[in-house]
Image (tube, rainbow, N blue to C red):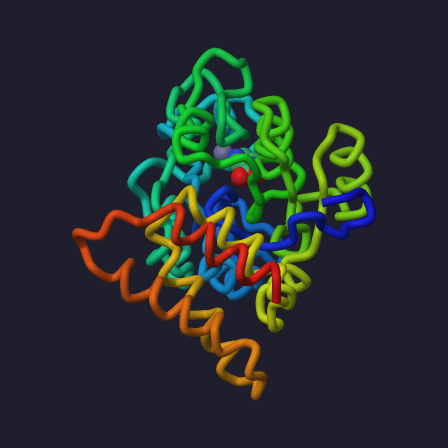
Length: 281
Ligand code: VGL
Ligand code: ZN
């Protein structure tokens, strides 16, 4: 995405990951460290989780009962997210069907860990960067709480690890800082910001043939998503009464059928040929 929020590669593909930060009971209003409005972003995050991300990772703040960050230990926070307690659980309304991995952090008594990548002392790493790279991810979208602590720390580390990084500010809530104040700092550190609602609207509207071709090209890296995307494309095309989409629909239908067979080795050249066809429409 560019600085003005307009994306050059606007569509979510398997080369993108969604990082859902600390959407836990204790961080919801009424929880031990309740963040105002945090429960309100759950539906937005659930809708985002339906998009064809290559990986959706969720984090859990997961502290021992004598954690250094707790006020009884001289730390800045009330006791929260104690490992195994109800307050440490993911919010029950959070859709978990598409969450591929849950990472726990802040487990050592003597160190806090705001970022999903490594602890605040930079002594131990969660392995998230290797996991993302192993899946061919090159861009991450960050949502959750708190924007001014764990979301910001995660986004900064994602930039440092070499990922294009986008914080979807309307799917985050802060403890203290306004979105505007956070945004300026993050942008100056190479983090981009955008709105989840815009991303969802973009993904919902009908795609042009060129956009379909771009998506298919990106999808070549992750064959299991071809079916989902092709099915969606078909739905769009079938709602138009345009004969020129007939060939494309047929080709995509063929692709869906092929991908549905478990033994089928996806034929790169066949897909590239389809991409060429679409581009010449
Ligand atoms: C967080 C304070 C303490 C967060 C976690 O998730 O942002 N904030 N622990
Ligand atoms: Zn914590």
